[in-house]
Length: 286
Image (tube, rainbow, N blue to C red; front, side, top):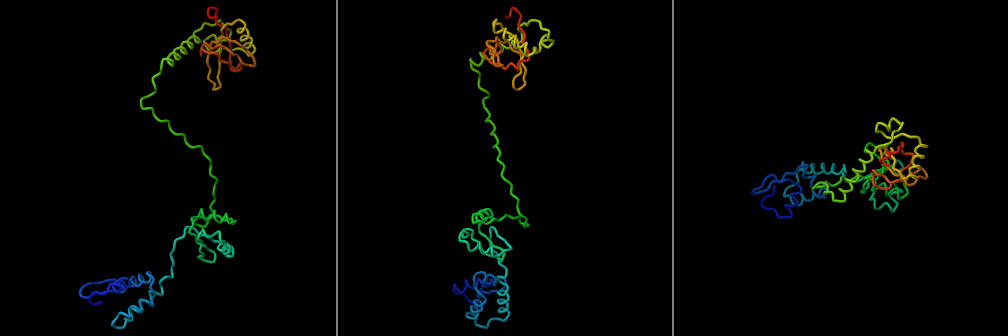
């Protein structure tokens, strides 16, 4: 119990050593294990507490209080708690001594916790790279002590961004685009409705693609080049799409035929091996 108001330094010190239980004409302080531990955590030793109480108490320090201080001080600090980002452990303590003695390990802030354990302030990845740069070959381990197996990162193509939506819809086609579309439609009508000469091939007779042998196809193409007549062909493109076309061959050489394509309304070159067959048009369309 402290009678009357205390001087500020004395009150502050007592506030660390003990808990205020009541105030009034006199302030009552209670010493507890927690309050004594608080004073020890603040850097005071048990001898400091005994000396302080002896200097400011008008009566001898009660023996139970002296026992309390000594008992708490005896247990205080037996367990240590600190922060470490990573650790290094090795059964060979001489190897750990070599790491600590190396000046290059200063940046890792290593500290020995046990003969076979070092604590580091660097994160595990930095610790691994640092030790490898020093010429060691450390391996990462899991919380259970198992060696971690790392896999090489696979290089993947980044995902394609979705196209931005067009708020007002597709653009209105201009006159040039409309004219080209009409010309293509009319050319397609010509290719599909042009009368053909009768053929012995049943596929060509019922409106399907004409079928002729390679020799017949080549001979008919060469003859059309000489006469300047248009012919009807079946054609399969690289994607496997079949179509029928009306063409006027201009040149046949090297396995290709160059012709004016009435269907596309332009000059094109076609591989002969993709032509399924050829048939002559009727005389009124030649």
